[in-house]
Image (cartoon, rainbow over all chains, first blue to last red; front, side, top):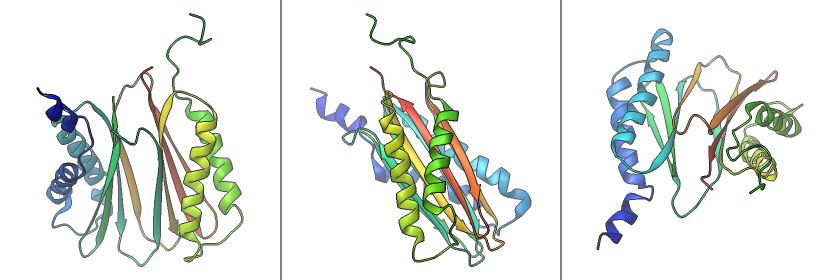
Length: 113
Length: 115
């Protein structure tokens, strides 16, 4: 019977998604310093490559990927999310990444179809 | 069956959601200055109130509400969203609000539930 396998494929697996996102961020801004002129490109690249890697996983989910890039300047930033969904199948994960000049926060929300 | 008046598919109305969000933000941080020890409370209240108001509308949607509050201090902030969903029924809206001492960005994502 394939029942166990199919239930694993229809729940949101945080570890797998975290790995996918970390790779997408590292490969886009891994060694760079904050540069105002490149930000738009970086942002688009991070969300698009994350989303295409996630859809390649082939699971029956709708995805929302949100990304924030903040220059390290001493400013305070606070974020919060609230979700109304099906707890047994849907989930989210947030990856916080930083280097010497940039903070990058990427959140992925997965909603099962 | 005549259960739904306006057809079987309900789509997301960004204008309605945007009004709900603006009222929530104004009600919580309308006339105040950035305060480090209160900001956690504010972001939590904003997302919870917004979510409650949206759910009260009774539409067949799952919601995600995201809020970011940032102190005005000259730093650069950039955000981006990318979504993989059904474009005929799902949608999002983002509201940017500011006062003298802080910026607040709230995004609402609504994903239709298949009935």
